[in-house]
Image: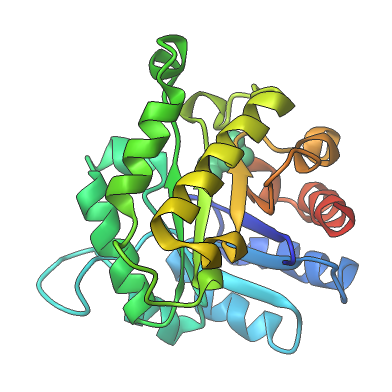
Length: 249
Ligand code: PEP
């Protein structure tokens, strides 16, 4: 299975930042891993034009559970696909916290993404308080149980899980390699229990303060098949070395 380097630009990026995408594509014309950028929805179509003919894929950062309707300000999975996206992140901890998204909502969004033909990247992760209370695996287990479809009615590669400890996002702090490996092994076991052998082919990403200086070490942890990168995906000079590290891992 090829590793996946996924960048999440969050609420950052205007037209002048398209230069970062050009630089990334030029630096990695034939990457040894899959590369995905999830810019704000306003940039997807323009990035898709720029990335045409390259290996770079585009994704949304969220989608509504419905195809269309009276949901002012929301965006559907179909709209993202129409704009040129192939992936969408659902259940990012910032959405769970800022918008009160429950596991049930995340599940509905993941199902909408899959129905629209998008790869769904489902995020899970414990808060610092949950970690300190020794509840990390319980929390991850419950989020997986509640946020994923009951059956794998899609290719295993269409469902990606991103383990993102909330306390590691944007803080510069990361779990130890042993901690990352333990959570990823736990997630793989849960997915195998739920979906059977095809779950071996599902990609498990780590996210939370990945940067060029720690990328190779994190990617050496067992069951890490890629990364979801926030801040360090905004500049090609930072994201490029992470892509290269995943290509070597
Ligand atoms: C994220 O928000 O998905 C993330 C991993 O952010 P950062 O890399 O900035 O910690």
